[in-house]
Image (cartoon, rainbow, N blue to C red; front, top):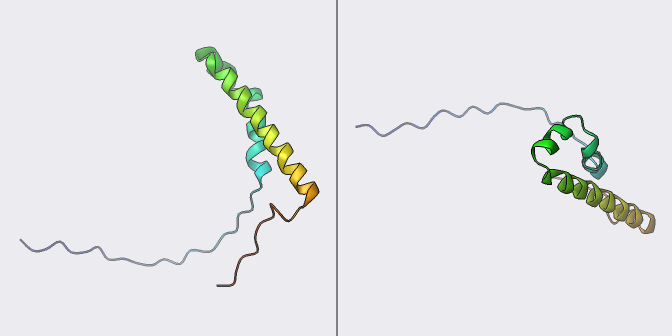
Length: 86
């Protein structure tokens, strides 16, 4: 039986995309979870879910507050590092 042949690899150039996300992009939706339209039905099906969603929103708000306090003290601490040249 002949050995299996390796599949041919074709390199395809892909344009580089830059995506700029901030912590607010992640934290804001988490603080607003309980106001999302589909949540009441989920909470009705799983009553223990409400407390966890509330805690997640609270923790997200607390994290945002801590980040803002750090930024007022020293904005460079949490700033994006400058990329090194390749």
